[in-house]
Amino acid sequence: MRKISPTCSTTTFGPDPHEWRPASFNEFLKELEHIIGSCPENSPLFRGHADRKWLLESTFVRTCKKILLDLEPHITPSGEVRKSVEYHQALFGLLLLKYDVLVKPSQELEVLEKEQGIDALFQLIKRLQQYPEEDRCTLKGTFFLDWTQSKDVGVFFANYNANKGYIKIRKNDGALFICDQTANLHLLLTFIFFLKKEINFCGEKLALFFIYLVFHLIKEVYRFDRGKVVDIG
Picture 1 (cartoon, one colour):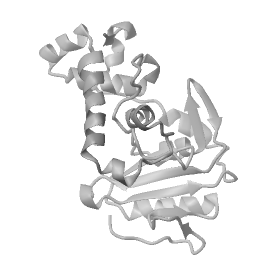
Picture 2 (cartoon, one colour; picture 1 turned 135 degrees about the vertical axis):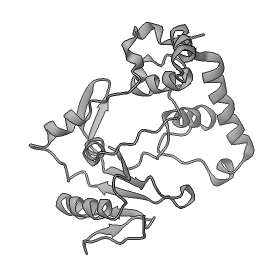
Picture 3 (cartoon, helix red, strand yellow; picture 1 turned 120 degrees about the horizontal axis):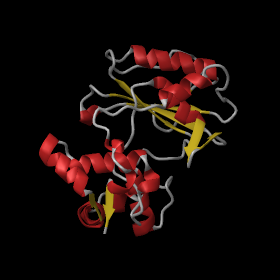
């Protein structure tokens, strides 16, 4: 993704120049199309947060921050902690504890791995990512971070909280993260749109967003009995 600037004169920046703050929802849509048009075809990925304070972190990292440092999800550890080898060793140790000791693929998945060549652990983690209510381990979450190629799905999650089957409109400023998946990882540019709490997107297109929330997996582990997918020691 080449370096680009806002197309609307009223769009402001946050502390990071990659944080764009459009003045209205219509201008947000203009800036969104502007950025998409600046990316190679089919390369943009989107992730929406209903609260702009939420960091771009996996649920597992948030859990570990709370356990190790007693930090809330929107708080970043100090630079000294983040740069320490011991902190990353602790995170990695908890990750191995969960997915190598406490939570393991079921026997059914192990058999499928041998017969069909699937990755049993990947299928297990993917399942827990999609159905977090099935994660009965104290160390909650996976290290996956969901992105979508649909801007509509990203905008949906930037406007609505979907939790435990309930969907409600956000109360705080939302954010839409955009990245170019073809960019070099060391030069990855992430654009953040902050949606002011007064700028809510409701109306006729809402039904379209719900349609986009239907996911299809090529290898569907949910065709097996839910109780047999996860084994917890």
